[in-house]
Image 1 (cartoon, helix red, strand yellow):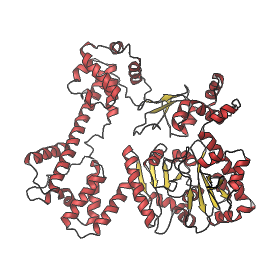
Image 2 (tube, rainbow, N blue to C red):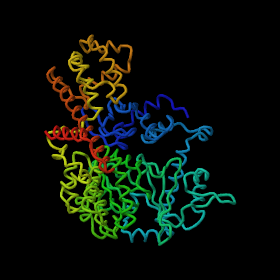
Image 3 (cartoon, helix red, strand yellow):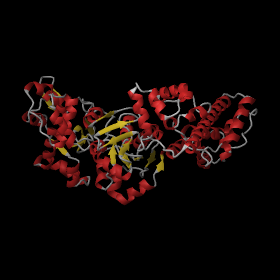
Length: 597
């Protein structure tokens, strides 16, 4: 269906871009812009800007750009007409009635949303009707009150084979579409039958409000406790997160999300006041789910059941969360429940205050993972020297270099050895080697924090654009173009180096790229005074000081990388029972001495 330009303008006029984007991304104020982590690519530092007054968004990391309709197109994978229709419905704008041809062309996703909406309304009526009495009593036994039933749109699937089939048919829903939605199944003899029968129905919604899937909970001790929607055109198992549509606002306020395993665990926590709780929808916690959560909160609590299965699931979830979330600069903490408890049972019997205490006592994911492995080491019969070596290997594998000394103290205490035993363990197994003169304390105040490539690339260019003459003065000390990770910045920087002797002012640089509009746009963005990611400088002295700081930090990064490379080399040699060459030891000791200063 073609949408006329007047209607498009009205959609834009009635759409609050900040509110729209904020339903997918946690935004904060930065000058005139709103900024957050880009929903279209993985990043640690927010580079996604929303210019609400001007009506467009721009990511300076991946280049995504556009208006409200373009945002919905990208984030929901929709065509332009479908994205416009979503926003029109959101804004209460009437679109022209569809013709028969238009109706046949209507997106498969939209028809599935409609089928799910009809099914959810049917289930909700059933729960409050005469036939839903048993399901309602089940809710009462689980302490789920009426307000929570309404908030989560809970319902009941009747104990029959064609109740939903008849309802969908009566509401004009194509049963073939309902089958694609996972609501009904085709019979071998023809026709369809209800997929969900005699179950408490729990719908899952997208962050924009569409019903995308259902979970059906057995009311008794059925062998299959849950029956869940399989992958459909609107729902991918392992990608979506239950209750994120409700939790995202609380997550923005709290700065955190609580991840649990089950629907009812999540619902119980919401009812107890923990509205930033979400659930992993009956699947092993996946990297896609972790990336979803990372968009909405800086801190993630993992709270799985305290039984054996829950512990195994927690271990996998934590490993996944650390791989995706902590590596992106956020934190993961592990909430430990008493044996035999799950979040639902705990909060119902012990109360919200007790669960709040568990959150406060939660452990960093690194500590949890180390404890798990240390406990396994303690159950073995290895010699003290072997335990020390394995303990040191755990620290190096699981913790940042800057925190090695801190975790050595912790692990040594648990293994009943000294921190020096751990530190020196990789040399002790070979008499030809000797212990290093001292530890490298990369976390001391003398060492600058890690310097992100995208940051130094941007800052170098910003300084050079403001004062091109500095490029000649510092060209020998600055990194070569090959060190630039950003392809656009690399191309610009290489050209500036080639032309450096002839560049006297910013105007000379703009003239150099006069016929390249895209580059001119990048240069202009680097000089915008409201660019939160670019430092502004008063004068030449400040620019020189910052360039020298960049050079020192890059040198330090190179030394740290060399230190880690030598450490790995020594570990491999010692592990193979070989002698460490004198030149390798000398290089290592020299770096140790330098980094300790």
